[in-house]
Image 1 (tube, rainbow, N blue to C red):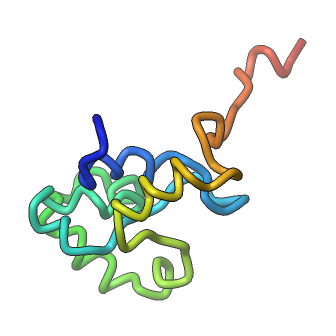
Image 2 (cartoon, one colour):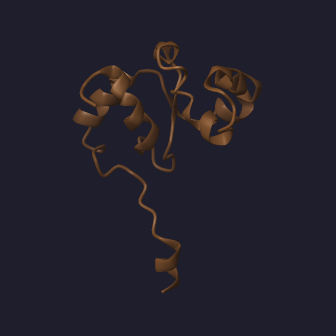
Image 3 (cartoon, helix red, strand yellow):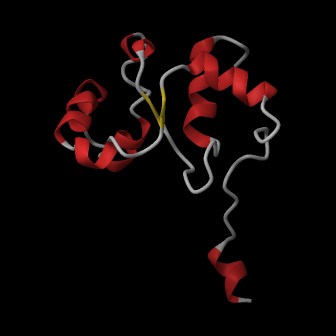
Length: 103
């Protein structure tokens, strides 16, 4: 996706920036251009709600979302991903297949 700030949304949504949190939302101005794609956790909690209504979901359920970590800059996400030693391509949650656990 390159170094364009909007490309940071995939990294922001799926890489572990804080231990114990594997997905994050982005609350910043680029949501206006991307049809609220940054409201990632809200989308996963309520996948049938249109993107235009996701900011309202966050407002209504603020007691659930305000305490969760989030990003305010996709540019900063890209910067941290490239230059922070604790982050990188392997900073994702790895799950084992349920069948593999039974063996």
